[in-house]
Length: 152
Image (cartoon, rainbow, N blue to C red; front, side, top):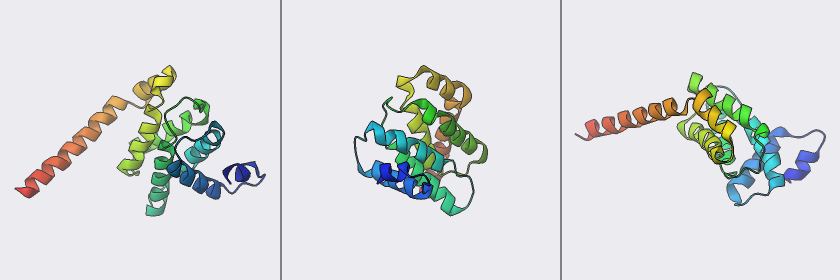
């Protein structure tokens, strides 16, 4: 169904994204042909911006599905690198993604680090991974401290 929808002249982008989300979360070991269709489709769907709950949920589901694509180098970075970078930068600026969606976007990118030196440079120099990791740890520490105070 994914390939058939992809080949149509007038694709239903929402249907294609839904099909890719379902397939990627249900199937282990996705073929290259499907990854080369699904990764760009899911990344494009993950670029939605907005603060309403429906948009946040759609982006979260999309990024979770994208993260299930595996950590191989099969999909050329040209199909996702700029867009994933944009998703992460947008969240860094606006803080409107849920933590799980944000972590999924990071994990998708980080899982490809082993395969590609330029991606490592993007993560360290442009997306400031260390700074973001410290911020996440500080938030988790505050949450743990709050729970301890509440229990006392």
